Length: 590
Image 1 (tube, rainbow, N blue to C red):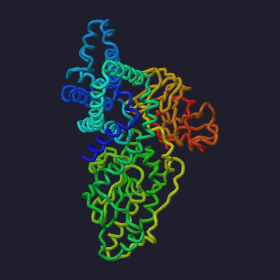
Image 2: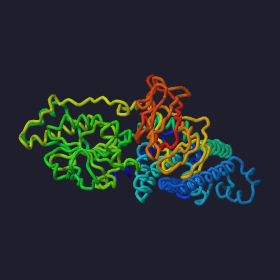
Image 3: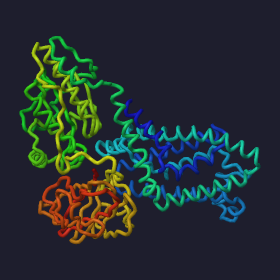
Image 4: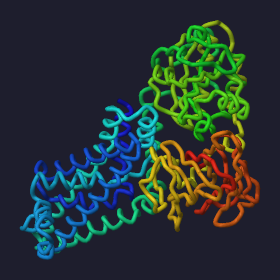
C-alpha cells in the first residue's frame, strides 16, 4: 500500500513539472464542459492508455517497441486533427469524409471543445499515448521491478496509481480553470477566439511532442525542478510507517544501562535466509543462527551505482560494531544476467574489499521473503530477530547508524553488559572512484538503459530494429539524448557492437558518468577511447580511463569514464571502441 500511495503522489507531482506542459492544452480542451460527460471520460482514457502502454513497454520485445511507436504516431495524428478542428472548423470541412467524421466527433459545431463521451474518451486515450512523464524515483522503481520480475497485474495497478495521481491534480486545475473560462466567455464574448487560441496551443503541444522537446529540454527542466521533491517524498514515505527519531549521542551513551529498551517499532520478524543458492565469505547463515546479534541485511547488486556508493558505510559499520554484536549481511540480487555469475560477484567482493557475508540470491527467494523492491535496501533486525528499521535507497546514513547503536544498546542492556560506543560518534568514510558520494546538486542526467527493454531517449534515427545487426548513426544531440554509431545488435538487456569502430554518444550534465560494459562473449578485452566535447578528457577522466581517454573493458562491471574536475557543465561524451564485441548495458551518473 505504501508503494501504491507513493506512486499516486509521484503522479500528482507531475502537475508542477514542465514535462507535462505539452499535454496541458489537450486536457484544457475539456475546461468548462460537464464533469461526467466530458472531463471524467477524458481523464479515464488518459489513465488507461498510459498504464497500458507503459505495461506493454515493460514487457519488452521488438513487437512491443513497434506497437508503442505506432500508437504514439497515431495519437499525434489524432491530436493534430483535433487542434486543426479547434482552430478552424470551416477549413476542417474540406478534409476527406472520414477525417471530417472524426473531427466532428472531437469538436461539435457550436464552438465548444468536444461534447460527447466518445470524443472525450478518444481524446484521453490519445493524451495517455503521448504523455511521457519524467521518470523520477517512483516510476523508475515500478518499471525496473517490471523488467526484473516481469510485468504483472501489480505493475499495471502501480502505473494506474501513478497516472491517477496525475489525472487527479489535472482535474483539480481543470475544474478551477473551467470556472474562469465560463466567466470569460460570459463577460467578454470571446468564445471563438478562446477556441482558436486553444487550437493553436494543441498544435504547439503536438509539435513539441513530435520533435521530442518533451523528453529533451522539458525533461531537463523537470529533472532539475521536481525530481528532488519526489525523492524527498520517496525517502520519507517508508519512514512514516516506522518513524524513528535519531538518538542523540548522549542518549546512546546512556542506553547501555541494564533493562534499556529501544523505542523503535517492530516491523515484523526477520524472514529466513535459506533461499540463497550459495554464500561468500561465510558458511550459510540462518535467521536462528543470528539470534542475540543485531543484523543489517543489505540488498544490492554489484554493478548498481547506488549500491556501490553505500559500500564505504557498510564496511565501516561492519568493522566498527563487529565486536559489539553487529552482523552485516549482503544479499546479492542480480539485475542483469551477467550478475548471476558467482565468479563475477567474487571478483566484485575483492575489488570492493567486502569481507562480511554475502548471500547469492539469484532466484530472488530472499528478496521475495522480505517483500523487497529496492536496490539498495537496508533492513535492521534486533537481537530477538525482529525487524526494527529499514532504509530504501541511498542516504539516511546518520539515522541508520543511530539505529544500529540503539539496538546494540538494547541488546547489551538485556545482557547486563555495557555498550562500547565511545562518545556515540558516527563513521565518516571516504569513498574513492565510483564509491564517492554523488554530487546531487549538479546532476541533470538520470540512469539510462541501453537495451530496448528499458531504453529511453534514444536519438539515433534508425529505429525499430532489435535482436539483429543494424548500422546506426548519431547526429546532433540535445541534453539527455544518446545514440550509437557503427554496426550494433540491440538486445533486451544490452547492445553489442559487431564491428570495430563503433561508438556510443551521450549529451549529459553531471559530475560523473559511468557505463556498465562487458568484454567479448569469449572474454577477450576490448580497447576504447573516451572524448569529451571532441577532445581527450584530460583532468576530467574517470578512474577507468587515463588523461588521453584510453581504457580497456576486461570484465563485465560498471566503469567510471568521466569525473569532471572543475565546474560541472553540459558535455557531449563519446566512447569509441577499437575492438569489436563489447556489450553496453546502462549509463549512470553521480
